[in-house]
Image 1 (cartoon, one colour):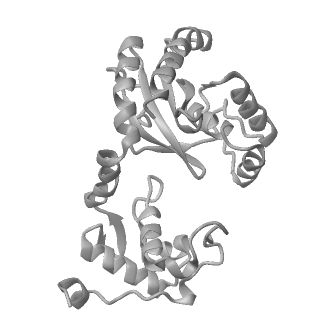
Image 2 (cartoon, rainbow, N blue to C red):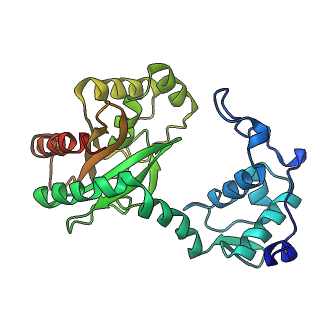
Length: 279
């Protein structure tokens, strides 16, 4: 028995720990008996912490993850023992060690390594910020980015997560989905007005996604944050599958929407074409 098992009690799957809302494996996915429930729940505990909830109590973790308080306590004790979580006065927070999980992806995944050099070329040719993202549930996650010396938005850096419904990259990625999946996705979202420009009506969003699919790009004017305008195109592999989206972002005070499209779309399409045979 190793040191970990001597110091930390084993975590066994318990029926009481399962939330009624917990996702079930798809019919075509693995059998339930092949899944490790403890790993799934431990990762859910880590994911419960975010920008709005940087510090959580044990009870809050239990509620967010669909766990009993006793189970949440054991997961937090385990994560603290492993160095991924710290505690102070009954409040828990993530430690920098969690960055290892993201770094493992960034250092090993093929997609960011292929896209990053093209982002550099694009950003420095246009003298504007550029980023690539993938869809993850309700959000898009930035997997590669470069600022070209312009600080346009704090969201334009690897690892940041922003809502898909009000971003150009998000609409490009949603436009690649079958229509029934788009409809289901919109029905599940809370379309909050992040700025006065944010589209918050489901039917209007559906029209914008359809427009994106028809024209091959998305242009968003200050819907995520005031002052930020973005244009995006899909990144397809040689089979035509959309793997990611790539954008150029500008400050609204410097660049109009017409200028954004006229000046940046040709460069984006050129980069898109160059990446197709590499992805």
